[in-house]
Length: 94
Image (cartoon, rainbow, N blue to C red):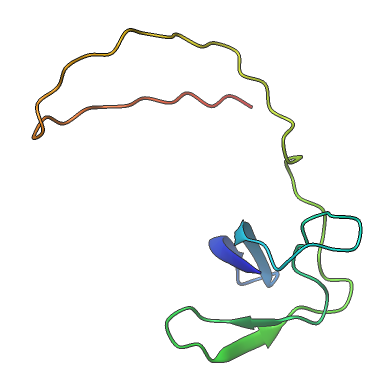
C-alpha cells in the first residue's frame, strides 16, 4: 500500500497518513489497508525507515464514503481560452 504523510508527532511518535494506493483486495473483495508489522519506506530513498508496531494501527478519523454533498450547482459549459486560469473554492466544514 502507498500513502502520503499528512502529520508527524515526533513527541508521541504518531504518523498520520492518507492512503493513496491500496495493497490489494482480500478474499471478501475489500481493499486492503496497511497492516501491522509492514515496513515503512521513503519514496525517494526507497530504504526502510521503520516498521508499524503490531497493534499500532488505529481506525481512520473519518469514515470512508461517509460524507454528504450539501450543495451542487450545475452550470452550462463556458468557452475558455487555452491560457486562461481559474480559481476554484472548496468549503469543507466539520
